[in-house]
Each structure stands twice: as C-alpha cells, then as structure tokens.
Length: 402
Image (cartoon, rainbow, N blue to C red; front, side):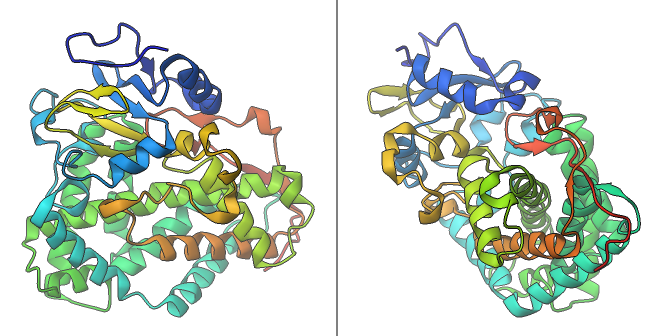
C-alpha cells in the first residue's frame, strides 16, 4: 500500500470525489481506496483542491476528538484558494462553531446548543405531522410524485423555516443559495444569495422577536453581533435542509427496495427507526465532511498528514470499515454520521425525530406506494460531500388519502 507521507512527496495519483462515477458507486470506490492506500486516501475534492480522505473508523475517531492537532479553522488554507472555487463556500472560515476552535468555538457552540435545546419535542412532532399532511395533500390525487422534490425537500425546508422563525420568501432564498453551495455549481453566487437572505432574517427577528431559534440566538448571553448571527444561521440551514432532505429520501428508498423493510411497512415505528439507523450506517446523507486543517504536519499511525491541507472524514467509509468486524451493526448506533467530539451535531435528536415522523407519516398515507423506476436507474447527484439522489419517483393509487 502507498500513502501520503510528506508534502514534498505527495502522491501522483489522487482519487476524484467530484465525478459522477464516484457518486454512482462510492462503496466500490471506498473498497478500492482501502486496498490501495489504507485509512488515508489522497483525493481531489474538485480539480486543484487536494485533501486527505480518512476512511478508517479508529483513525477518524481519534482525529475528531483531537481539536488541538486537528482544528476546524481553515483561514490559512483558504488564502491559496480562489473565491470562485466551487467547494470554498462549504469549507471557508465563518464565525460560527463549525469553523472555529478554542474559546470562539465554545462561545458559538453554547449559543447554538441553547437555542436548539429550546425546541419542544412534542411540539416538533406535531409540526412535522402538520407539514407532512399539507405536503402530501399537494400531490395525493396524482398517481405519482417525485418524493425528493415534492416531499423530502419541502418537509426539511418548511419545518426548519418554522423552527428558525423564517418567512417562506426568505427561506426560499436561503434554500436556493444553500443548494448551489452543496452542488458546487455557481457556488459563489449561492453564497451571496444565502448571505443576504440570512441577514434579512436577522434584521426581521431583531424587530420582531418570537419563540424561535433565531430569536433565542439573538437573546443569548454570547451577545452575537449581526455578522456572527448570520453565520450561525448559515450553519443551521446547511446542516438542516440538504442533509435532512437526503436522509428522508435515502431512507424511503431503503424501505421501498430492501426486503428487510419493504415487506413490513406498517409494523410500527421500530421498522422506520431500523431503516433510518441502517441508512445512517451505510449511506449517510453527508457522506464526507467533518473537515479539519492541521496547522502542522501530523503523524497518525505512520501517515504524515500535511499542514494546512484539508482532512476530510468519510463517515460513509468509516462506518463500513471492515476493521470494525462484528461491531458494524446499525442497531448499536456507533456510526459517525452525526460526527463525534467537540463538533458533533447538536441537533441530532431533533433531526432524527423529523426524519422518523416524516417517513412514518408518508408510509401510513401512501401504503401502496412503489418506485416508478428500477432502483439501478436512479441517479445520484455528483459532489464530494453529500450522498444525494437526483430524484425519487414513486407511483401510488390516485385514490390514496391521508
């Protein structure tokens, strides 16, 4: 096996994470990476942006729990990356918890956790059920739908906007900007759209505070200024809309195509929870992320990771690391799909509840639903970070009711 060892002897061959071939069959790619490189893989996130992809579970856990050697602050790295780089908006420095270290991270994390923890779980479940009812009503008289664009995305968008106290018009601009950033297509424009929309939301909640995450952030003792506020909201939307949309869609696909679940759609919530846990283990919606930027070369298990070059954790590959042996079972929820360490997702129970409620509601409303195409004909959107369908077409009787 070969491995990246020093900056001077960087490998000639890098694996391209941005190509459609990788998006179509990442697990085959991960297996080949493991055979050729071991737990640390030289990759290109996009052409000209090198990184190290971590595909070993044990190595990833050590990195995620070592913020001193692997801080999340990218400011030195981004000095050499043009603003036009399609992945820069997903990776650049922002004054928020995701891209900060030390006292700044503690301050931002405290404000975010407090604002998120103000969500009432019972009220959230009721909200998701109401949104699900309204969303299904928009297509239930038809004989089919694209559940990605007509169900999963509207659920994530509408629920998150309600939690953030964000009016629909602002929310649509935020979602549009965030989608461009995730796709890496016209990302600079997406970043600009996103920045203006969240600034408008902050201004609105200054003038009209309510019982929502944005208002709670504004009232927190951290005394976030407007720029900091905007970047907290960018993170919340980034973690909320695209990954949640893909988690719902990927899990519905699993339920419809996997015999373990498809024959027992109405066995109760436990079946949906098992499907969710399986997807989080095998096909997490944010497949490669949790990025750090070591300020000095760092040796991990004999591999020297270069200074100021992104270290990207492949949650999808790490969860399925053969070295885990019998520990690789979805039921123990030891996967890294929510990350771990100081940057672990603070909204994990809320995201899980939203996805479980939305999927259960859909299956109850459309019990005779089936895929409208063969599973192998479904297309995955390319991109180095997400595991995302381009569409999820289904068929069901037009008389289906909720």
